Amino acid sequence: MARDGFPVRCPVCRHEQAYAPPAFPCACGAPVVPPVAHGVVPTPVTERTWADDWVTVRCGSCGRAADWPRPELGCACGAVLRIPVLPEGSGPGPGRGPAPRAGRGHGATPEPEPGGGHEVVPGVGLGLTPEGGPGAAPGQGQGPEPGVFRPVPVGSARDAVTTAALYLRWLGYADVGVADAGRDGRPPSGARLIARGVVAHVEPSARPASLRDLECAWLTALTREALCVCFALCDFTPAARGRALELAVPLFRIPLSGVPQALNEAARAFASRGR
Image (tube, rainbow, N blue to C red; front, side, top):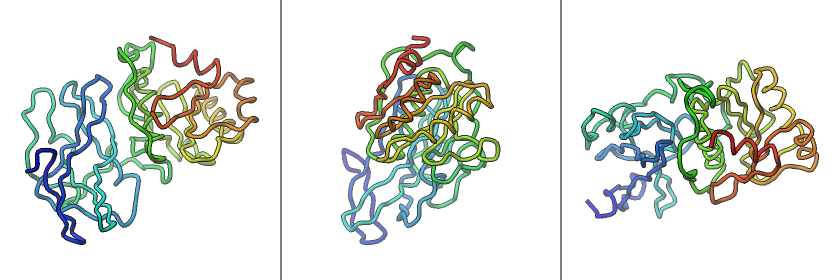
């Protein structure tokens, strides 16, 4: 095994290279590494679904399960390889030993969609359980994690949605999930995240979030008696900014650094809650 990873052979061109899975920041502060299935042949990505792009990983320090981007590796031949991972629950956790070094991965046997088979809304970019899992909103015993927000650099639309979900979790919304299309409808564009007490719209594309995006999210939040928050990778149109001021909707821009930036007073107040 290479010092900086383990060998992965491309099934398309047979080229072999070293691969080390990424580490993601758990809400408790510990690094979380997807338990890759050593010895299992990677699968070339020919078609993307949001369920296949995400994997549930349990933190070895606090036992919290969360959804993270499934490991991938780019080959020099142009193929993108999906690295197989062990099923959720087979990785390390409190009271468990180290994860097995080999086993059935996603490339060998399909694993359940994150959240136990709930629908993942196509096109939103976040394979989280609709309506979230068990958790508490701020003021119900679980406030923001201490310390600074640990960002994930943004290099894609999916990263932008991940950043919004991580930020909400860091602020204490532990049950962040994808909105249920059957109850809440689908947003005009982008992603809609739901947690107890909050509805968040995320525009992860290069276009500014529109007035319609904001108003649809605000109406959804109103029906749920929740707070509306909006994130955008690019910016918001002047009309959307103006309506956000009228409705006191927090607006955040997601820069490539991965640290959301408050764009109005409502966002600054939202970000400071519970700290």
